[in-house]
Each structure stands twice: as structure tokens, then as C-alpha cells.
Length: 236
Figure 1 (cartoon, one colour):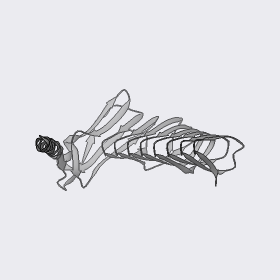
Figure 2 (cartoon, one colour):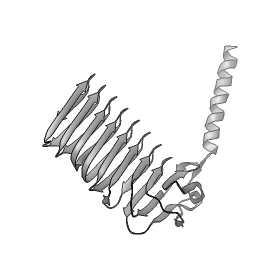
Figure 3 (spheres, helix red, strand yellow):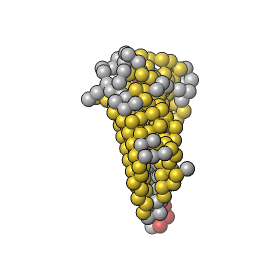
Figure 4 (cartoon, one colour):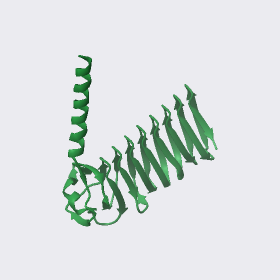
């Protein structure tokens, strides 16, 4: 009976592995550009390991740059003013799997499932929401405005430029690296082994718990600091 169970478990695991392999695709190395027709949007959501590069400009434009045989699997759909970028099939290997985006205004960025988001030019914002999760990475250079930033589940957010105010929340081993972002007023919350780096010139409200760390530079005009359960708030 024990041997039968082991055999059945092995066969089941093998079938899952085979299924995963069969549902993936390798790029053919022949990189092509494809311009996508998209309605207007002011938010971008990227998932499933895709790479997105964003510039701010007067006209909306979306261009997919990928191996020719992968183009049909890369989706760029707009739903409720959000450009959703994903891949419908797992990609084992690709010479390129990126989407180049130009947009006049941006109010929200979300990256998940091992995807990557980069700004190629500084982006002027009024209010921007930045959310990273599940091992994804966001690199964002902003100007002016306000920012609401969150990172969870081993993700990373890298911020630069300047902002009037920012709310930063990091948890579950994630990082918000905003040492190169000159921020006015900042409210930071960190927990569960996550880390936040800040450069503050206005008021700082910092809460660190459960092994989370907040590191800050600058000369805050006022500080409100709370540490618990092994959390740290450290001035560099």
C-alpha cells in the first residue's frame, strides 16, 4: 500500500510538471515591434513577469517589443481606464518581452507576479498610487504631487525625484527604497521584516513593528515615532 501511494504521488507530481512545461513557450529570437490600439487610460497594471517602460508625453501610445511568436500571448487591454498588461502563457525564455508606454497622465501603477515597471522620464503627478506585490519591482521617478506607496510579499519599490507628501506601507519582506526621493511630509508604516528608506524634509510619522525597519535621512521639522515587537526607526 505504501509503495502504491508513493507511485501515485510521483505520477501526480509528474503530470503537474508536464502540464506546466506544455503550457509554456520559448521565444524564437526574432524580435518584432507591434503598435497596439488602446483607448485612453491613466492607470497601469502589469503582471506575470512582463517588463513595462513608461514615458510621459502628450499622446497615448503602446508598443509591444517581443519575440515574434510571443506577441499573440501578450495582452494590452484597457478596462475602466486601466491598461492591463499580462501574458496568457508562461514564457520559459525570451529575447524580449517588454511593453513601451507613453501616457499624458498617470494616477496608479500596480505590479505583481514577478513583473517589472520602469519610468524612462520623470513623471509629473498630482496624486499617484504605487502598489507592488509578489516579487515584482517598480522603479518610479516622480515630480511634484502626492504619493501613496505600498509594497508586500517580497516586492521592491525604488523611488526618486521629489514629492510634496507620501504615505509608505511595506510588509512581508518587501522594500521601499525612497532615499533618492526628496519628500515633504511622510507617513511610514512597516512590519514583518520589511524595510523603508526615506529622505524627509517635513513632518515624519513612523511606525515600525514585527522586525520591520525604517531608515531616514534629512531634517524633519517634526517627528512622531513608534516602535514595537522588534521594529526599528533609525536616523542615518
